Length: 378
Ligand code: PMP
Ligand code: GLN
Image 1 (cartoon, rainbow, N blue to C red):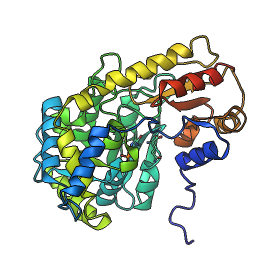
Image 2: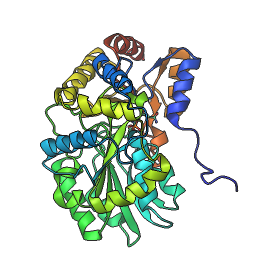
Image 3: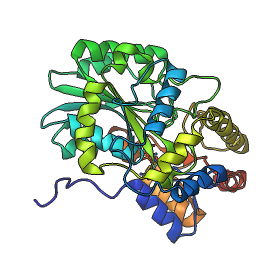
Image 4: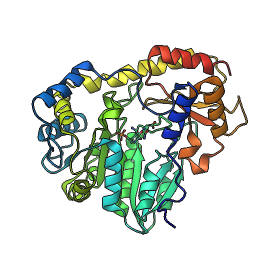
């Protein structure tokens, strides 16, 4: 009775990273790059420290950075967020997600998520007394059946959480998906949390359908993004939340007591770095080459593979290789074959039998070649 989350285990990312270290395995599990963040960006952080930005930032974040984010969203998605009132800099998307849910979800509110779902949504909703209504997405394409969503909306539904590009499947929401979502959100007066941390990692000429692109949807959405994912420095824990003023006000009421503000020199550095749009516009191409390199190396493998459309993750179906559960299979891969991956059933109550593991390809070509070498043995 002393636990508010009695059924929540340690996050799979901690579990697999530790298992990888303990067994000297390649870590393609937790999603982070094994190449450096840009030295020019690192130098901007040093410079900001030398310039004296070592005390609290404004609560909502450095204003110059909020302006750059506002400009970025407007140029990409044609929607204006007022940097004074509609953007807050956060300690990664994780803190933004926690804060959004804390600010909006009360006891008995229902929140729809699509499973497999990133691991922080459900526990955070439960922490505030909300109830998760999962909607199962099915391999290989993980598409949403919007009729099913409509059927699961009740008078208690408060929010729908979406994540496109989707971790772990690499699926993307299309424009039609977003229009369906907008229609349902308006009709049922719902809030939307749009987790867009992989917004700049989209392949094969597809475009990112941000919730900010759809006016009526943007009016009821919190959008969150992660600099860690975009700029190869997940350990800096930097990101932001954008939302219309009436929602951002509620967000900031909580944010000010969770962290007050996030670290100042890194914000200053990103404010300068974001001015060069190439720093994020070239990212899709960069990761598409990595995906293609890995898929090329995996040709002829016994894993069944549907190419990822976005994110830096690739799902591998091992149903023709083993009858083991994905938990047992990934444990064996780590301990015996020295490669750590993610068993996706941990994000996926209803998909325990899917036999899908997730590989992170944000790795050097050398690591990818080694990884493919091991995986092709099966
Ligand atoms: N959402 C998704 C879908 C993620 O994959 C991650 C991991 N980066 C996060 C949120 C958290 O992002 P951050 O590291 O910026 O807290
Ligand atoms: N988002 C990363 C992933 O999906 C992990 C982040 C974390 O460790 N919490 O692998």
